[in-house]
Image 1 (cartoon, rainbow, N blue to C red):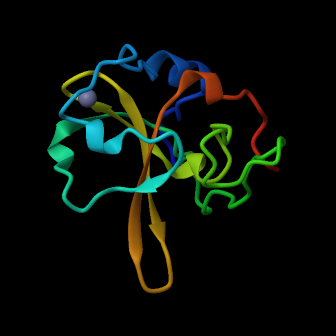
Image 2 (spheres, protein in one colour; image 1 turned 30 degrees about the vertical axis):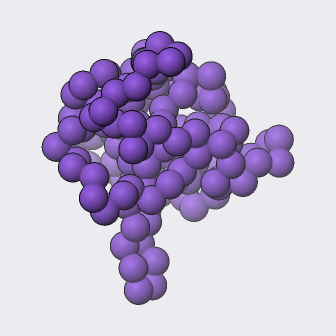
Length: 135
Ligand SMILES: [Zn+2]
């Protein structure tokens, strides 16, 4: 552990940050990003539309675990996959908010063998779960 680890955001923080725009409204700033499951960040998107709100990253010497949390049979790309702090990929996410409407998004960067993919998912309070991180 580093000597001064910032506290990663917990489930309660995430629920506080999740502020979806009222149904039926659309925001030109982030309309291209609104997606219930993970998607690649469109290359044309101007990330200046977003401001950083916090981080879920656990400060540790080791890479965070790669295990995913899917008790109900969802998978990584599911629209209803739980948002489980401490589990992949949430343990390497940052939370960003739209400057226009305040809607919050999760972002992380997937490093493949030959590619780097920035991924984004809308932060929805009803999907945030309180579970212990993988051992
Ligand atoms: Zn917006």
